[in-house]
Image (cartoon, rainbow, N blue to C red; front, side):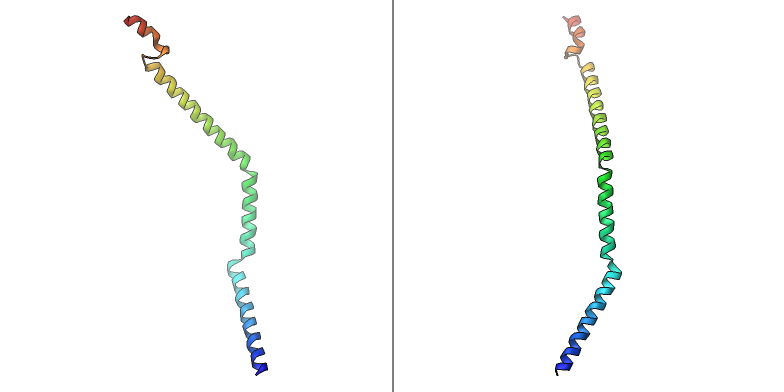
Length: 90
């Protein structure tokens, strides 16, 4: 009886180790972890470049907004930029 229990427990342990081995072969968690770490390092190294690109886009949009505001002010007769029209109508 003790021998049967021991054999059964050993069989369960061997089955567990086989399942574990197959899981590591199938899922490869170490490879996934190393790919994740490499991805994080690459992200960290390209952060400055991405920041510069974002700043460039922001400056471009600010410039476009300023141009649009200037165009609106130019075509609006009630602003100080078009004071000559107001003087002519007086």
